[in-house]
Length: 273
Ligand code: HXC
Image (cartoon, rainbow, N blue to C red):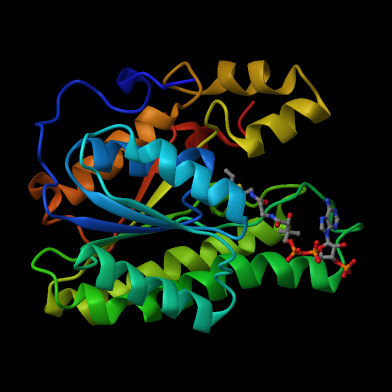
């Protein structure tokens, strides 16, 4: 089923905005990252998406490529961000086959809902490894290529849990706090060499796996949560894709080292009655 453009992109951006740009996306077959990629490709970029599942990643790449005639989208499955060698090989292949890496979206993440009582040391470590070590590896693998670009930019897909802490998400909260911190160090160390490094922190976004898991626990939870969001609704994949387009466009050039929640101010109400 084809996805209408209005689902992932507002009608305000200029065609060809990202012509000749190449984006490298970890977790690129996931709900949020595939829509971010789709928006960038629709506006002229070529893309390389990587993921652990071969079938899912390659199918997502084929689907994304359909949004623009002539688009080149490579899907590299079987690539685990915890393994530096496979990530490096993917980044090198992206630069070799598509000519450069200008933008990076560090989106690979692991998550499951579990209490601290039920969380083993290895369960905690698995999420820390995917989210934190995986993000570090993504930077290490792509930075040599980014430094050759005239417009090197990185977006990390984080969360808002860790601003307050979150029951059943202790592992993800800890991991995303570390991702935000890594983002800031990258901005400080590589900013002088032209690299822009920012976090986008989605709130509860319709359609995602995380939201579906919450609903599976309690189908009233989402409506109750949405009712408390100051902007009056859940987020959409388009909200996140539009923020991504803005940050990667010339309009976002001077925004660096920032955490940008795309959550309708929900985190400011977290815990509020
Ligand atoms: C308790 C669990 C568990 C669960 C796994 N574990 N699932 N513990 N409850 N539901 C434990 C296992 O028992 C094991 O510990 C340890 O975690 C590692 O499990 P593996 O299956 O061996 O790990 P691995 O194959 O590396 O898989 C990683 C994973 C998995 C994170 C556990 O869920 C995964 O592959 N996730 C990727 C897809 C995903 O989660 N996408 C959602 C991203 S959304 P023991 O002690 O038994 O060895 C997202 C959004 C966050 O991240 C923010 C939202 C706003």
